[in-house]
Amino acid sequence: MHNFLAQSHGTLFDMAMQYAESVGIQRDQVSYIVFGLAAAYLVFGSAARLLCNLIGFGYPTYASVKAIRTKDTDDDTVWLIYWTCFAVLYLMDFFSEAILSFFPFYYILKAAFLVYLYLPQTQGSVMFYDTVVDPLVVFVDQAIDKYYHKKGN
Image 1: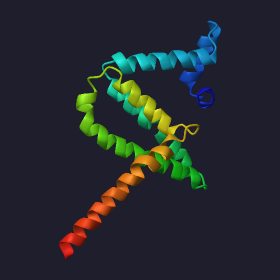
Image 2: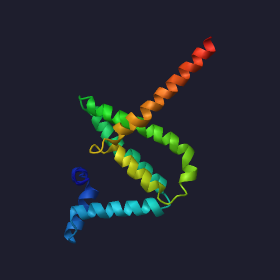
Image 3: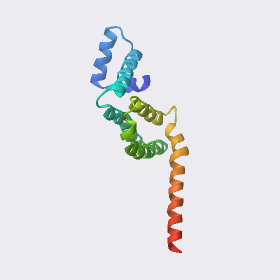
Image 4: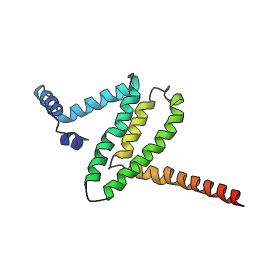
């Protein structure tokens, strides 16, 4: 995560880093503080759902646009897999969130899972796609084929 923060060169980010360094706080410590505050907000905050969604599509949207701009299609495929997994999770979440959102750690677990999906170190979206999404699509395809064959006879 340190590399990601080091690559973010916005003026607000630079000012925050300069202030932190002036009071003796190192870059890594700033990262831990930001993650700690975000985690606390995901548990206790009134807009935890919004923050969780921003985590789920903020950086992935940025990375997807950068991937589209490259000539290489391998990174496009990685982000297409992520967005497919995100869509499946969103559909499942739509039906379960009303119940699950009453659990205090729901949004922090959801946000952590979304980060797991898009981090290149974990390749979580590829694993989730291979074990959940693709078999689900195969099941739906077979059900549709069975329905149309039964109806055609």
